[in-house]
Amino acid sequence: MTAYIIFQGDVTDPDRYETYKPLAAQSVAEHDGRYLVRGGLCVPLEGAAPRSRTVILEFDSTDAATRWYESASYSSARPIRQAASEGSMYLVEG
Image 1 (cartoon, rainbow, N blue to C red):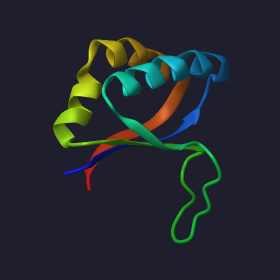
Image 2: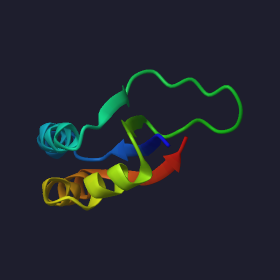
Image 3: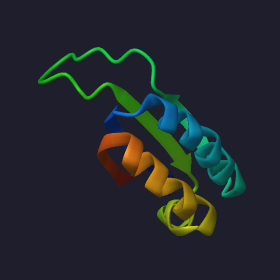
Image 4: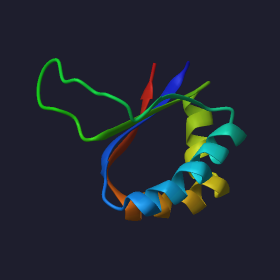
């Protein structure tokens, strides 16, 4: 079943986040993931407004998404994102 990685957060260090983006993109491509959403306009229809940045990745399965998250290539990028932003990341099966 298809799986999605969803990140919602606020970028606190834009320069550092720019360093993270190509590293993350390369790691996603290496694991056959696809970007569905990368920032962009987010309009709240019900409830509180979300954080300022939403990223949605699609993988073929939860196993594939987990392999990406735990991969060496993403493990080297992750600390950069964590230092450059605040937010939540989660895996959703769909």
